[in-house]
Image (cartoon, rainbow, N blue to C red; front, top):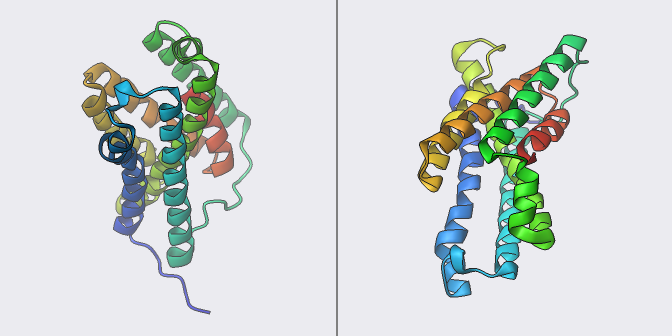
Length: 220
């Protein structure tokens, strides 16, 4: 059997960048391809065109995530679903505190419940599809955290620093500033991204637990 190559920090960082690039493919769909199909920019799309956009985006993100998973496992022997250690009571306490802080920050940012605001803005049908879309988005930014963490650990030789959260904070924060045109939204996204990385370490890098908790923090 062929030996797996030991990945360098740069190779893990490239996987994180691929996940980030995967998120960016939504802009290609929304700004380049779909306006040609639908006959106008996103702000003019009807309900079904928005839903089709979310479905297409989720499909693209799924392909990217599966490709990254297989690349990591095939080339470097890194399995995202490795068994993690048992969490201690203080870790659960820290996770709960981090989640409460994140949800409080979201409540302040939205001037109320994000869920209620989006339900009122979208109506039941669009609301359901948008929240499914959020679940797929969680999958990609979790991959940024995982591989950003591995990369910077290789470079700086420390395992107790939430490097993955720092990578998400920088990438996600900059993108939100660019796409939303708001520094405050970008900063809030950066803080959230950093805290997501903290939670990933607190759950002992258990990707299943991390996904559930991060999805909860993100959608609410």
